[in-house]
Amino acid sequence: MKSDSVALNEVSLENQKDFFPALLFFLAVIGQNIGVFYLMKRWISLFEVSMLLFIIVYLAKSPSFEKRHLGIYLLFNTFNFLNILTADSKTEALIATVSLMFYSTFTLFFVTYIIHEDYYNEIISSFLLACYALAIYGITQFIVIRVVGFYSKYIVYPFGSATVQIQPGLTSPLAARLWRSNSLYYEPSIYGMTLVLGLSINEVAKMGRKLFKGITILGIIVSFSTTAYIMLVTVYLLTKIFGNSLALTLKNVIIIIMIITIILLVIPYAIDLSELLPYPFNRITELFYRGTSGYYRLLHQFTLRGMS
Image (tube, rainbow, N blue to C red):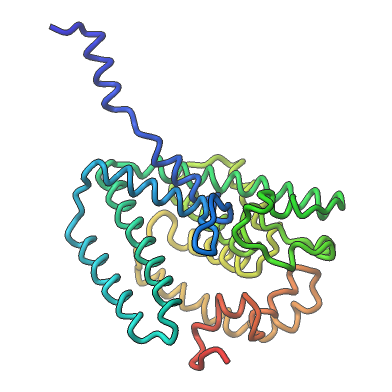
């Protein structure tokens, strides 16, 4: 018979979590703009490499997919491939279709793994840790460039020639005067919105400490992203209304309708007043100008006409 100590060791090993998927997820979150190798005239990012490794590792475990998840995946990719038939450029459509299929395949494997392996807490912790790292670097960028006044393109994009995408406006020394931190990402708004998502998850999961909350909010502020600011206010209001529950009670629905009504009534006056505010709070007016990133992210989908 096995000794008690050996038996206990075996049980503890069986109960240990495999943290490799969490590591891959962490690398995927922070590695969206980090090129690993060049293929077919484009950088393959750490984000994509991490997803591919996740698929390969989990495929080796012979995953069992739920029928509803598999059905959604097949239906989505059926419409995805039909898109090629109606596209003007077949080459561009094929690239987009293959990309969407790859991302949807990762999503299928990812969701299945989390459900079957009871991996929620590890993935949430991994994402929050990635947000923490992004926020710290974004704040550091702001201090070095905006406060100290030392500008370097290697601070903006620390991975140099291995950077997947570069925004020309951030690489100009003139950008230092009105610096908006982009952290490790391509541009500030993506960085800011990622942190808002992390803050939202933390508010519900209650996994991060107050230090995380403070660092994340400061990281959102230095992004100077109008979209991220609006998302932050929205998240704050929703958490106050719903708390940890997303149940749509009659009371909550009435409150939401009242908030939307007040916002619509206040918008015309807010636009006029915002022009008197200091940067970046005066950037809210950009939401109403066609051609700005904020307009296309928040308002364009509500217009009836397509982009001109």
